[in-house]
Length: 159
Image (cartoon, helix red, strand yellow):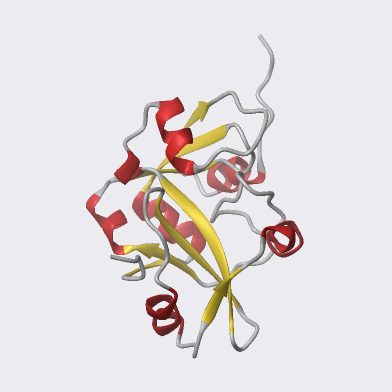
């Protein structure tokens, strides 16, 4: 049996003695989080995507929200204490986070940025996040994710 290649996300979780469940899915090109949830059989409301934004100050912020929702940029700016925020362009993602589109995780970015989880995450003991590469989703305890990312709950999803 082939040994699984570990991602930085997996290594960081293990270093912090945080258990996780890995779910693999076939993917040869980018697919959105809704399609990933469908392929892995995970509930949409419990499957979260990771988006990165830059504030007017130039600082970066991480927003983790259900795959079917979008960020309300005005709410997000208030959460960060910025005048405004804009989502990072895809071509900047790897340079800033170390992750590529479709494999961006709130755990293990190049630097620890302020991280916000949409308040609905608090309803679940576990949520699904990217495992750090396309084709890998991890089921992780929500409180453990907040701990390892120094994250907090906030209201920033568009209604």
